[in-house]
Image (tube, rainbow, N blue to C red; front, side, top):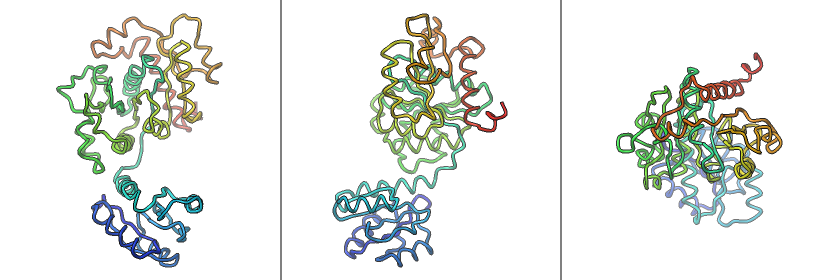
Length: 360
């Protein structure tokens, strides 16, 4: 079975090895293909079987892990064991049997990752640290701009609480699917499931809507990670609408993104909140978009003073936007706002392509 991880155990204690073997095999998500009691047996098993995962005690030599995922397992946690695991480049450290569920989840993720096609998209994460700054507006308009340029764009709403893109794009909760329909799929999520919740917007881009109401409670972080990976493998550009809170999931999205767009408005509270958010974003991927710019004491020029670089673009305030949003419509791509986002999309694509950037 393609979704079952092939595991080699390298545990010196025979009784523990048997416990781990039966636990993993009974799960249905892993199959132990060999056991090893020392360095030599482990190296031979890796050479012959090319496993997906090695579960080994820190004391067993693991220098020959190769392309397999290395997970270390100890009977008790100690500083010495942790140091050995880190030195070996282990992807995880677990204490048996207290953390056996965590071990299985990690092994399951390895199996699931093998089914995800190779990433092809430029991934853009859109975030606003202050509520009301316009994260939903910028994400939707940016998706429209990418589509206008001819890119196959997929917009993904990762907000499990509010799912504002549903109304912002003019969809009705009663009539359309959302990622909540994927909750029962779990680790088996594949491209075929993605097609069932992928909606086409009139502006030419696809969207996966966030869950409605309490259904968001059933959406796990692991499912969202797999969803993002599939989105990045099935489009030219994946735009992630990231929720405001700096949760582990939001931080993971920042790490996966080629560019992180932080949306700010020209006020002190927005600048302060965004400064905090950008502390967890790599400076090489971060960029500022000023939204609803008007004449004020704080100007777009202050972006460089506060954040160390100029804004990628400045979106002017437009009195028509609230009315358009209330009716689930986007600003016209040929208008002043549309042109601002078209320039932003062009720059993001150019920055993601070193060859194009060099030629320009």
